[in-house]
Length: 366
Image (cartoon, rainbow, N blue to C red; front, side, top):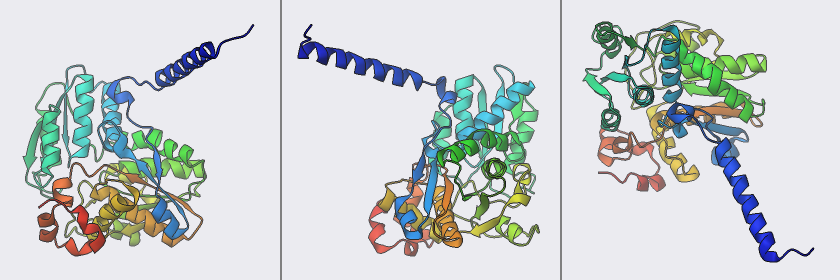
C-alpha cells in the first residue's frame, strides 16, 4: 500500500517530537541541587595551539549557583544532615569570601534552611548584593588574618554556637569539602579526558578542590597524573611546596578573591604532601589572561579562573608538547566586573599596563 508524502512527514515529525521528549526527560534533575556538577570541559584552542598541548578548563561557572563552590556547599550540607548536626528548619552559618556563601545561600533556599554569612569587607559589592538577594543575612567584617580572634571564620563559628539547631559549616577545615570534589569533580574530569590526563592544576583557598580532585586523579592514574598548585601573591603555599614543607609569614596581597592562604587547612592537608609542584602567578598575568581569554575564546572569567588558566599554560610549557592538562574555571567575571573592567580600578591597582593595547577596548567601565 502506498503511503503519501504528507503521512510520512507527519510520522517523521511525530517520531522527532518523541525523541526530543525522551531526550529532555532523561536530562531532568531534581531541583537546584540536582543541577550541581556534570559541567563541560572546555578545550582552550589558542593556548593549546601555542603550546602543542591539549589544555582544558572545567566550566564550573555553569553550576546553577555560578561557581565551583556549589559542589562544596552541597557536600558540606549533606554531610551535616547525614550526621544529624543539621535538622529541618535549622541555620547554616559560614565565614566566606563570597562564592561558598552564594552556593550555601542557594542550597539553603532549596532545602529550607536559614543562611548567615560572615565575610571580609574587602569583597566585591556584587557578591554582597547577590547574597542578600538570595535571602542570606550578611555580616561584612574587617579583613584580618586567620590568627586574629576577629577573623571572619572565628566570628562565624562563635555566632553558630549561640544558636539552636545551627551548624558552622567550616569550609576550610571540614573535609566534606574535599570529599565532594573527590566524588564528583575528579571523576568527571577523568571521564571527560578519557583517562589520558597528564596534569591538573588549580589555585586553592580552602584546599577542597585541589585535594579532592588531586587525590582522585592520583589514585585513578596510579600516580601518573601530575597535580600542581597555583598560587597568587600574598599566599604562602607556593613557598611551602618549594621549600619542602616550611611555612613562612604571610605578606602582601592579591586582586584575586577567595584563593591564596596563610596556613595548611585540613582540606589541603589531606593531599599537600602528594603535590608534584607549584606555580606562582603574579596579578599582572592573571589580569592579562582575563582579557586574553575573553578576546580569543569568548570566555568571561573572573581573576581566579584566569589565574588557573595562566597556571595551566605555564604547566604546558613546563611539561612540553603532547600533554593533556586540565584546570578549573571557578566562576565568571559577572561578580567582579565593576573592578576587572573598570579603568579607574585598574589604574588604582597599577594594572593597566598589564593589558596589551589591543585588549584595552574591553575596559569599558569608568
